[in-house]
Image (cartoon, rainbow, N blue to C red; front, side):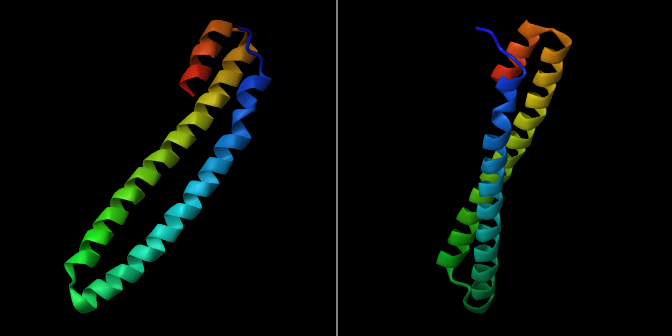
Length: 98
């Protein structure tokens, strides 16, 4: 399989859209947690506490997904540089990891 400079460049729009979607979801969950926390401070219901804890786990997963997306973008840039220098096998492996 041949890989050219344009192959890793195809991932840029996809990863950027994923990061945008995860960023919006992160902000929405953060606002929901703030609202639930203000309600929890008034009532001290255990259901609210469990919901907040669940949402915090989701935020942790979203944050890790965003970090993986940033790493993927970095690896795509590295792959393009390695391919530009002429190291096709290394470029294939870096692209596979990204």
